[in-house]
Length: 281
Image 1 (cartoon, rainbow, N blue to C red):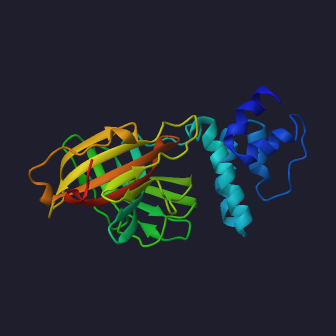
Image 2 (cartoon, rainbow, N blue to C red; image 1 turned 60 degrees about the vertical axis):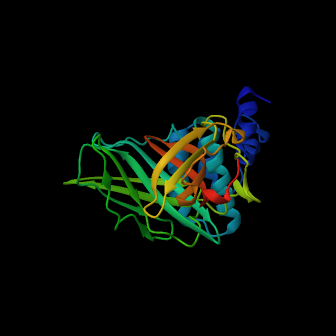
Image 3 (cartoon, helix red, strand yellow; image 1 turned 180 degrees about the vertical axis):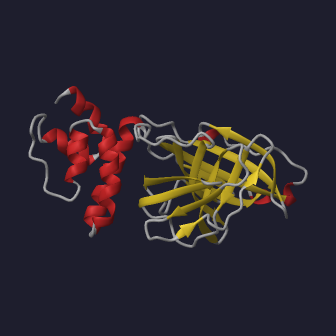
């Protein structure tokens, strides 16, 4: 096995298949995803990303869509998505797109959150799902004094699906559009309740990407203003501070896995919420 193949074996079945076919003029499988496989085989990451986006609308079976997701994972495994040729405009800094699954007692909801930094105060954002449904179009950004902004979509009852999304920013007469191949957020199981405690299992991730981490926060009801928060690298570090107002507080525990899409960060977030009074350290 070549050096390249030994690196690709961690990238999933697609690139492992390519390695098994040999390193020169291999007869790649006849499939709609063949252009992606060729680009991966030739180490043409930019072309592979573009082909992955272009081919999505033509896939017509679950097997093809599963192969598409495997190819996406293979691309992410190379450089965590930093090799996607996406450049954000000068007036948009550090945009981060969160695909969130939030579990609370007796309920599970999904939503999208977008954060970033901009000196402009006229941002209008839309996110088009693979189905054509629009999110964020009705959301109004909230701005901080330092230019930080945040938008949240409405609550959704169904998981965010894998596929190609289109993100559009408009400011004044300028518009920035970018199509993004995303893994979706179906049925994340990284956090669960065990009695009065919480069990956290950090998800697998590509070696090229940051290790997943855990965030904790306490929010005061009824307005749910954050009164305490911390980030921990390992689940065993989870502890709640002693609080005399525990009966008024709500907990959030989030497991976060991050990838890049060029100049954009994409994060999968599994969040578990509940009353602090029902939790134990």
